[in-house]
Image 1 (spheres, one colour):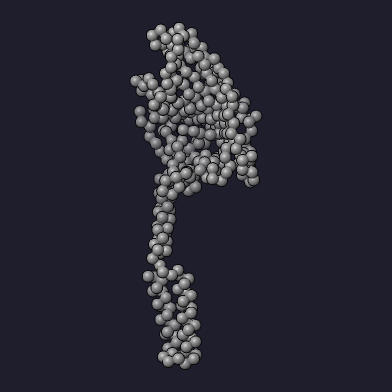
Image 2: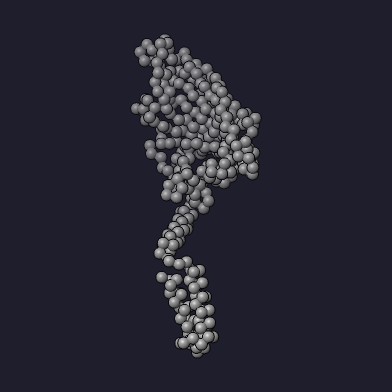
Length: 318
C-alpha cells in the first residue's frame, strides 16, 4: 500500500507529546538450545542510560534559556510510564528471551550553527528531549535448533521530539543544511494520517509489511502513533494560496538577485559615480562661464547644464 506524502508545517506551539515508533530490522542467529519457543518468556532489563550534556555547559550565554525544559528528574517518571505501558502491552507474549531498554536524555545543541539546522527548534522553540528504546529478539525453530530473528523488534518512545515520522525539506541550491521554510515555517514531509482518536494520531509508512517479508534487514516499516497534550494537530497543511504567494515572493527575490548580478557585471561605474561626475561637470560649466571662456556664456549655461544631466541619465540606463 502506498502512502501519499504532502507538504506540512508544524504548529509553532510548545507541546509535550509522546511519539511511538515500531521499526523493523534484523538478522538471524542460531544457538544449540532445545527448540521450544513457547516456553520463552522475555526477561526485562534496563541498560545504562545515555546522556547528552550539551547546552549551557557547551555554549554559555543568552542561549542557555533554551535548555530550561531540560530536567532529568522530571523526564525519568515519564519514561518509566512508557516502560510500564510496554510491559502491560506485551504481557503474555512468548517467544523472546529478553527485552533490553535504556533511557536517553538529550539536552540539545545551543550553538548558533546547530540551531540553524534544527527543524524541530524552528518549529517549536524546544531543543531538549528524552527517549526510551526497546530491543528484543524473536525466537523460532529451525529443525531441532532455536534461532533468533531480530525483527520486528525495535520500539522507541520519544518525549518532546519526533524522529523518522516527519522528514524536513532542504533547498540544496541555497543551503543544504538549513530546513526549507515557507513564511518562516519549516516544511515537512509526513505519511498520510491513517486515523485519529481524540488526541492520538496514527501513522503508517509505507504501509503494512507484506506477508512474504521474512528477513527485515533490508526493510523499514513504520507504525507510529503520536499522543498530543492539545486538541490542536501537530502538523497543519499549507494552503494553496499560502504556497503560491510564497513562491511568487521567492521568484521576485530570485529576479532581483539576478538583476543585481547583471548590473554589477556590466556596469562600469556605480550610479553614485555618475552623480559625482555630473556635479563636477556642472561646476566646471559655471566656472568657465564666469571666466568668459570661448563658447561659454550666460545665455547657453542652462542649456549646457541640461545637456549634461541628460547624458548622465542615458549613461545610467546603459
